[in-house]
Image (tube, rainbow, N blue to C red; front, side):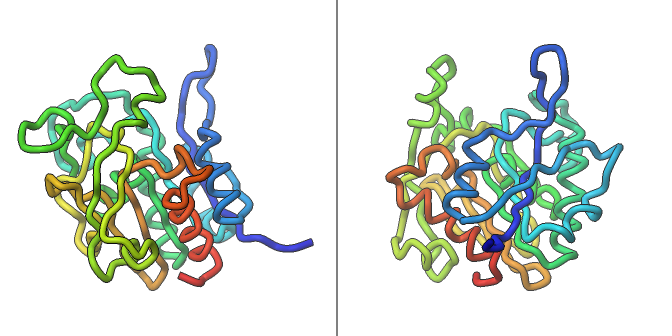
Length: 246
């Protein structure tokens, strides 16, 4: 029996019926397992009952996924209430995970909320006007569109020459889906920009804290990987990272 690397995927607290459940949308798990060629375990966001350090040493890397909830503004020094929904237990588990993964020299990948979370965990800030500012593109489809139509909302991102993504794709730019109301305000120290939208908003970054790869994107490569080589490529990078080959 072959031994594949094991990816930890953070869960969210979401209401299922009348109960709170630990959930991961299947698209994230199946895209990672198929195209990174790995096994996966769900990391519950239950920080009152476990610590990240108890599980990270048993994993080969961690993925922080997207989700409808937002990072609480207080975590990046914003005194306003912001707009929910919020998932404070995921926030707490995420902060613990980022610290533990980096300390253990394991790969850390992020998508959408995960992209925003890592930046906040490392000291960066967020802005909440990415679909309302007159100075930015609209980074989210108009309110009221069908769910699938949200992921049809797209724009170009320019890849930074010599960066990890530019090297992997061998292209100067990508056409990506855009489904976010929040984005990077101030980039955390130590993170290198990998991609920007035409309005200048940071859309991807990378780093090698303690030598292990960290790569996060604001868009949703998990949404449509079948027949989409650009989406597959993100998870193939994850697979290489899990095997110590990135």
